[in-house]
Each structure stands twice: as structure tokens, then as C-alpha cells.
View 1: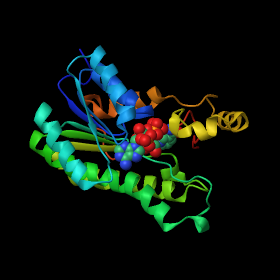
View 2: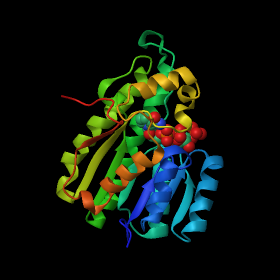
View 3: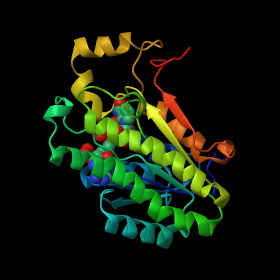
View 4: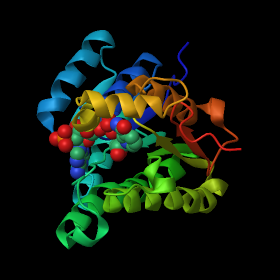
Length: 254
Ligand code: NAP
């Protein structure tokens, strides 16, 4: 018996990194998966691989999370294919330019990052929650970041967008608790995926990052995917508005 038997999950940014791992894990645990990504070149092989292992459990859809019309289409296609929506994993995100302090950040760059990360999360909840309400229950997992709690120099727009996700999560948890819809956020530290290649491919930076982690390694996509699985599942039925840090102990508090 799978931990998500009978559930239908939409996972964004499923063509790469954590989202691809979540799509595979959720299908393995019995969910029907709507895997979406803007980049079909990444998404198609992931969907093909899941289909081979777990036939008829997954569909792949091209999707820009910052576009409201795309969300309307995704929800319609998910309902058409599987009849309901139980789970949303708002995973798609971009880091944006990494070398600029706040005073050098352009409005264009700010808008780009905020539109994918913050607006994308908002639109995802806006368009899936009505289907969850009709379904009588649901679980949303918003992928924020450690930077959404602490901020990070040089990553102003990213930090702001991830902070918006953190507080949006808590507001939505309050708004929709009465509808049996849970909304939680995950805050990863450094996870080895294509989005962190720019850091981890440099040996000195990599060693410095590892040195700051009490567990002495960088996170893997499955470390986040298993947390998303737990929060998405009925095992977490009394958890909402929570922020789960996954960072190998990097920010252990007194
Ligand atoms: P990733 O490997 O870069 O995967 C993200 C996927 O989302 C890519 O396929 C990307 O396509 C796609 N995407 C980008 N813009 C999109 C859009 N507008 N609409 C739909 N899809 C879009 O990233 P990851 O490292 O797995 O990160 C997943 C999430 O975790 C992100 O929200 C990220 O901010 C967050 N996070 C990651 C870390 C980490 O250390 N890796 C730490 C904290 C938080 P392209 O490749 O074409 O851009």
C-alpha cells in the first residue's frame, strides 16, 4: 500500500532537481501525478521514465507558473485526466542573478524572480484550492528556502520572493483550514541540483558550504522530496501553517 494511494498531485518544476524526484516518489507511493514544467526538454524524459516504471500514473504538461492562463489550463487538464486535485507541490522556482547587492538589482530582475516564485505560488493556490474545496480536502506544499527566513546577501529578489511564500503559506493555512485544506512550507538549505551547480562545481565554495553544515554533506533532492511526501500525505493531517527547515542542521537554534 502506497502512502498516497488514491491521491492526485500537481507538481510544478517537475523536469529537474527536487520536482523530478517528487514526481517519481509520489507515483511510487500510489499518486496520480500531473508533472508540469516550462522546459519540455527537461520534463519529457522525466515523465517517460515514470511512465515506464508506473504505467498510467503520470501526465506531463508544459506550464509557466507565472502565467494565470497556464494555471487555468493545467487545472482543467488535471481534472479532465484524473477527476480531482488533492495535492499541490508549488516547487518551480528560479534563483535569478546571484552577484548583485540590493542597490544594483534592476526592477526587471526583481519582477522576473517575484513573478515565478511569489506570483507563481499564489496563482497555484488560487487555481487549485477551489477544486480541493469541492473535493472536501487538500494539501498544499510550498517550496520556499532558508533564505525566505533569514535572507541572503546578493539574493535580494530571491529572498523576498521566498519570504513572501513563507507568509502566504501561513495566511492560506488560516483561510482554508475550515475546508480541511492544509498549507505548509518547506525551507531547504543547500541541495545539490542543477540550480546550485554554479556554487557546488567550485571546489572551494563546495567545501565551505559543507563545513557550515553539522551533518557535513549537502542535501539531495530526495531529502526534500520525502518531506514533501509526508506533508502531502494524510500522515500530516494535523499539521498546517508549519515551516519545515531541511538544512542538515545549518540553522540549529538554541
Ligand atoms: P531546478 O533543478 O532548477 O528545477 C526547477 C525547474 O523549474 C526547472 O526545470 C526549471 O526550468 C523550471 N522552471 C523555471 N521557471 C519556471 C516557470 N516559470 N514555470 C515552470 N517551471 C519553471 O531547481 P531545484 O534546485 O530543484 O529547486 C526546486 C525549488 O526548491 C525551487 O523553488 C528552489 O527555489 C527551491 N530551493 C532550492 C534549493 C537548492 O539548494 N537547490 C534551496 C532552497 C530552495 P529551467 O531549468 O528551464 O529553468
